[in-house]
Length: 213
Ligand code: HEM
Image (cartoon, rainbow, N blue to C red; front, side):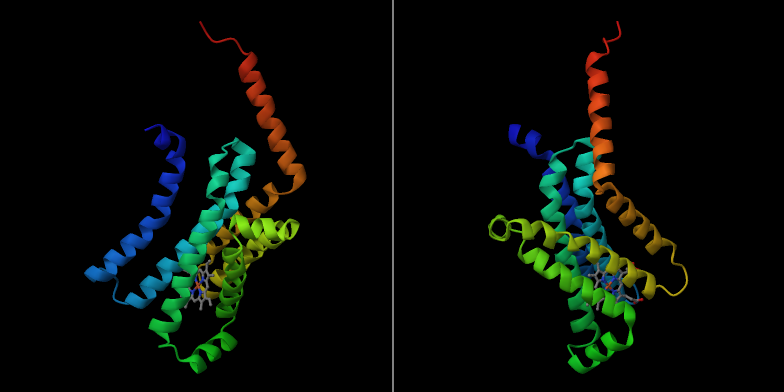
């Protein structure tokens, strides 16, 4: 029970991250997909890959603004879930949609800019997933931090992928882009210092305010 109290956020976050995969497998097994099942799976895996990537990028700003430290323990995991969903997304595209026809896949990459942007994002996520372990973090030292900042570039490429693939209504991808911009702004040292000081001031004033009788 004490373990659960200390780790409730990790349990909740891992469950939330894996649930879409379980539901997807269930829906595939039960034939609960739409009339275009391949597109359905592509959309779902793509959307969850984007969500996980954004959650991974949100962990540090959440800790900065709210002081909620358990978020930091999920940063790496959300990144790995992003890669898992993105890899599934790519597998569905290349195996189910294109039957692993390398010629056709290559033509699609060259002809469609949104595919190229998605591929570039996936190729950035791959080394980030491989080097996410503590061993790689130790081995790479300062380079590790610099390397993992590329997650923001991956995020921007995914937004571009999304904007380019929707033909008419770009509101949703632009909303995701706005969220990414906010997360980036919160990483700027000045913004970070502002929020850390604000949080300290708020908790200090809370500590000195006498409790209401
Ligand atoms: C080589 C890599 C990739 C390929 C070939 C690819 C391919 C596709 C395709 C074919 C679609 C559906 C387009 C349509 O039917 O209109 C799609 C949608 C999408 N992809 Fe990708 N993608 C790749 C990488 C990624 C990555 C790395 C992410 C996120 C981390 C991602 C996120 C999305 C999202 C959010 C959608 C839209 C889902 C929706 O409309 O609900 N994709 N992708």
